[in-house]
Image (tube, rainbow, N blue to C red; front, side, top):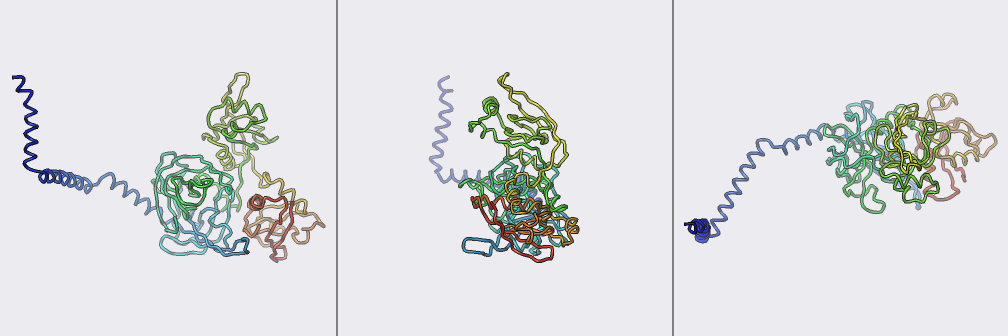
Length: 493
């Protein structure tokens, strides 16, 4: 009996196989097709009744509908110097409407050297634009157009977090008013871009390509959380305006608001000052630091942060108690991953603002260190602070004092106001006293428009770095107190 029970299932299987052989492959395929058709019908019913994918698609469409009216395409044209002489150029990028007064925000490199600017709205309308101000160190520029009928973007009140879904808008490869999406891959990124001194980028995998520069990066509510500025290409130093390779970089909204509001109100950006020099922890570990304290720090501290390698006398940092060898791990409650991020965060703060700093301080006796919290009152970074050599060279030819041009200063010297730099004091009898007397407006450096004293020093610094020479000719476009506009050449060492 047990033997028969054991053979029962096997007989069923053999019988079924025999039936299949008799019926043939055609019937099997028909049964399979029937199953597939039934599954497709069920899937279609579920999709038609409203699936999660439908909701996601609708949400993406709503973001596009909400954001696109505030996105603009920026076209710039002008002349530039090359080995073969002056040549015309045409550039394009993206931007977005900042407020109801017609202010447009974009990247400074999008409008670099332009003598004519135009923005195109999503409905095709084109408007002439003027450059209101730039902050070259953060790569932010503000344009202004006729404000009639503009739709300002909504701005987020805080920076995004890692993992947040984001949408990038712009004109990649001149495909205007395009949209892509991804997530925030990382925060506090530094890419080593030579043209940008303050780097604290949002990293995203949303597709970004040439032409996206200056376009808004938004959250799922359509609020701007950043502005796309560069991409990693995987070629050379890996950072450029080349083809997208999965890593895009954007300036966070907290930095944008700080810079743009000051450019609109004052034409220049006041930056915070702490009075320290710093390096990445990886850099400290790789280098054979002469300072035994820094050697100890690199051996004992494990983790991210920015190492203090110099503290200026009487600076806010020294007054607060910071020392060489300290590792800053948090600044104003935000985690510090590298020196570039900390440098950017310091610059974004206002003078007299009180900031909390968390740091690790080495203790050789303990063969370890202690976590310490300090309070620092921020100072103001002067434009000439990091340009001592240029300041000295200008003094040697007779230029004693320069200031950012203001309405009040223009009235004092009885000249018409124009954005730029004003000569306030020169050495009498010097080589420049006749051609650049007090009240002279410097409006161009090496053929590039400047808006303030920081622009002035930045332009000269970049030219020195590009030429790699100890001597060079400073080329200025100036408007003298009598109203005449001239091109002035000044030899500098």
